[in-house]
Length: 564
Image 1 (cartoon, rainbow, N blue to C red):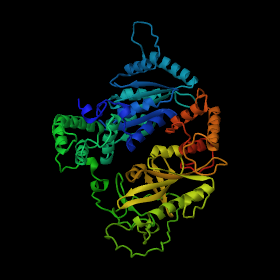
Image 2: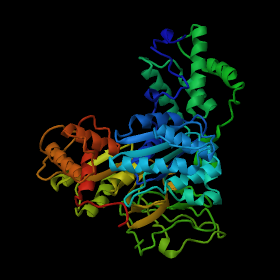
Image 3: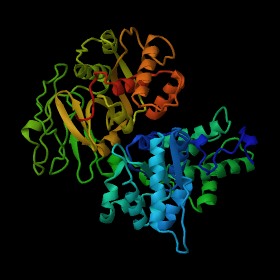
Image 4: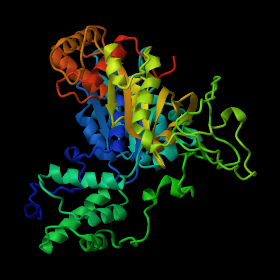
């Protein structure tokens, strides 16, 4: 009704899970990456959970549009099934005939035998079978156990069925019960989709309006956008409902801009009531405030059972003890934690803390001198590259480390949009930019295990839980990669030239080794298949990310993150 009034070609805030409107926030991007990773996995379960309206189904629809051609997908959207109903539905979705004779109802064996035969024949044809179950929190325990048994269908190389479970947070609680421990151990990737931040809420609204054909300034005032985030708590479905009603209200009032009163009125109509203007939605409060930590001058880290503050040598002020037990986990191997005090500036040690908490062990004592943070950002970036260089056998000691690296056959790579899944895929050390309470700082990521990351700054190392890392890391990542033999100059996104020719030759070799589908019979199709399998948006060009993945899969000598 209001589309033409605001210059739109269609309604932008439908609650239908249309993947064309998918806004890939960092959380949604990583959720999609986890699903794509599941397709490449060797079988088992992939788990995607999220609050009601967080966008799980929309991510799933976008995922289905990117499923490789060799995948056969069965999608179950109503999981309120018994075990026989489940097997019957799976056979129906995979178009498997279930022969049955006699008056008695089919037995489980009547379904399992043809399903097993289908999976084996499909595997022999080079196909992969994927079972997706939406609203999986409604699955009965006995049905989940049957799903686990289905993953026992396997060859010597891989399991024949990959299962993706999508559901609300109760699904995680269900899988945490002792009765389903065996299934939980077969989850190879899991991700919980949270709500949007206020900045992401603004981008989300602008994105959907742009997809619907809007140009020019947004039809929402700045204050209205803040109120929308406040009321909806960053949940996409609630944002859609509120924005749709607010635009309708503005149209009815002949207003070209939605203001705060219009939003408040729309909220009363859609949600019955509007939260008090002074109330802070739980998710918008800072992590530090929720823990009662206030403004901290050091590196504050969130833990499930305890908290502590750690010093990044030469970057931050000395930490203040926060708990009776230090939860800093120093790498088990002997690490020299002595740090030479920087000469640029000398400060007096902080006053001794209250004697109640014990002091940290002597070998973990922080240095007493610290460089000022903000005035050293450029130097810190160069220092980070210099720390990364030795892992590649290079001493990057100049004022322009990237130029120096290029002369040695290496190239710098930066991105603001890396994810944990992406780090695992690239499998190479790099520099992470951490958003600390008093500003950004950088540290070197040297190892990535299943649940922890090893970070290094100066001569100190920390082993950090991944849940903790994600509270201070927003995706800024930098690393090095080895350029093709004979290449000179910086390489960007290329479609021709010696570097592109080399990459395409490597893809032909990977295809000969069975790493790419045989039906990719041209260089363009091989490149497309490879980039799709690796989750790379190359648009027909060989990108630095493509070169890095080619290097990894062809065994080019580069340092790795994963333990060997």
